[in-house]
Structures are given as structure tokens and as C-alpha cells.
Length: 120
Ligand code: HEC
Image (cartoon, rainbow, N blue to C red; front, side, top):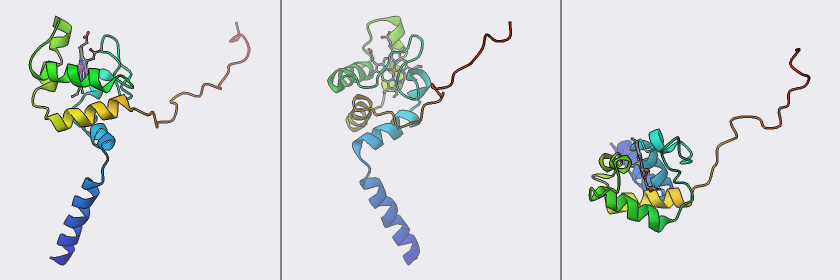
């Protein structure tokens, strides 16, 4: 029993020490935002990039979508994803996005060079 209590305390305190950035990062993947906006929030095809954009703008847009306000057909797609977001979650998400730092290694080795003419 004591062990469980200790475990619980540890869990709660770990959660409490999560920064807003980390909370936003967790939400971003939990809510599936990465599915359209990309794992590095760099955008994909017609889905806009969100990384390092103004927090005020991102907040404004998310609140508009939450209120079911969209300017065009394309933006309507965002409404189900913004519906139900709490102010705190929007705050965390936009902090993560506007402060975004890419911590992942490059996927491709840009120093790789091919030599020769490919044998033709
Ligand atoms: C199904 C695909 C999809 C998912 C999932 C999705 N979005 Fe979007 N998002 C869009 C589209 C489409 C737009 C509007 C693009 C346009 O205006 O042309 C958009 C726009 C936005 C904008 C406004 C950006 C701008 O330049 O106007 C923000 C902010 C945003 N999304 C945040 C999020 C967040 C946060 C999540 C996760 C909770 C999320 N999106 C999940 C498709 C998606």
C-alpha cells in the first residue's frame, strides 16, 4: 500500500513538473495534429506549417475553429479537431508550436555524395 502511494506521488509530481511546452507536445501527438500538420509541424501538402509561428495567431485560429468559425471549406476540416479543446490545452499547444525546437536527428545524411555517372 505504501508502495502504491509512493508511486502515485511520484507520478503526480512528474506530471506537475512537465513544462507547458512538453504538455503541448504531448497533446499535439495525442490529438493527432501531426497527422495533417506533420511530426515537425512543418506542414504537409495543403496543411499549413505551424512551427515557430506567432502564438497569438495560432491561439486566435484555434479559438475561431473551436467556435466553429471557418473562412473556407478547407478550414472546416479543423473544426472537429479544435472542438472540445480547453483554454489550457490551446495555451499548451500554441506554446509548443510557437517555441518549436527540432530535436530530432536529420533523417537523411546530407553529406552523402554519389560519385560517377551511374554507370551509363
Ligand atoms: C484532418 C487534418 C487536420 C488535423 C488532424 C489538424 N489540422 Fe489544423 N488545419 C488543417 C487544415 C485543412 C487547416 C486550414 C488550412 C487553410 O486555411 O487552408 C488547418 C489550420 C490550422 C491552424 C491555422 C493555421 C493557418 O495558417 O491558418 C492551426 C493553428 C491548426 N490547424 C492547428 C491544429 C492543431 C493544434 C491540431 C490538433 C489539435 C490540428 N490543427 C489538427 C487540417 C488539420
